View 1 (cartoon, rainbow, N blue to C red):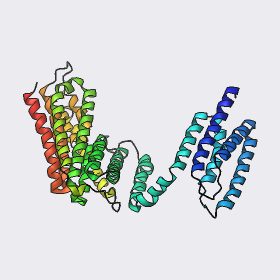
View 2: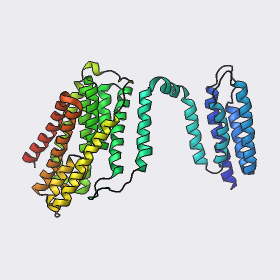
View 3: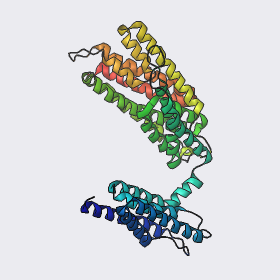
View 4: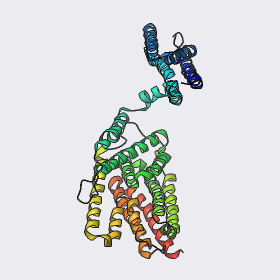
Length: 410
């Protein structure tokens, strides 16, 4: 290790000790002696210096720090039984040694440790007062579904037509659960009138179909949230339509240009209807959602995923049976499930010379109509009549506006 590298490591170690020690100094309880700025700085320099002398010396220094930490905890435990400060001091020594090998990583970890120490009170309030048992249960279930079950599923297709992949299907379940969690958090942290539409817009980039079903479930459980949930579902469709245009432009730029005005007009119409329902939300919706309810229903997510899987299998079978002549029919059927995958098939109907045929342009409209029909059915099935009527009005406005502009426009 060069002289410059040694100095950089020592300065990084000293900075880590000063940073963590400053935070600990401010968090001292009156009458309780704890390691502060000077102690953390000295321990950091001790760790760095002994690391330079060899691993055995460094381990001996860590052992010495650990013994001193244990003796200090024994003396202060009657007044402060927590062990955060003790482990922070020991970690300061470890990070000081790491700074000699990777100063950037050690500094980053030091900042994270100091931040965690500083937000002690907000984290304690969140875990003990804000977070409910049902929300913790939902969060653990979502983590298990995404981090435990999902990686274990095969990514290869398990059907004769290479369409049904367990990994992809379970991703739908995880997305629906995640959308429910996002909407729940948005309503808990903001007011439902704007929290749900905001959550809906970002959820639409993941899956607008799943978002419509999940927000419908919320509208069914709490009819007072019907207007805000309807607005959220339409905002999810708006973000999905935006992504639809991007996918179409990437697949066939000429086809997108020929449909630019119809799609833009449809987006404006959908935005107006979604905003209208958000504004018209009654005053009783201006309340925080109760933490006594679940953020999502696992059975609800499984049912939607099973339905989408069935439609995917039928579409794959139709493509295998009919062949290329059934591209449009297959794309429309896929549009009931996944809007963005269907538009890739429709783009194949465009002419190679850049002149877009009416079949290609109206094929895009047919895919949009199929997606809208699927969402309307999900809206009525998951959220009831009031929610279904509102979602249908926005989607009908989208289709009518796009069709009229395409007929009378350039």
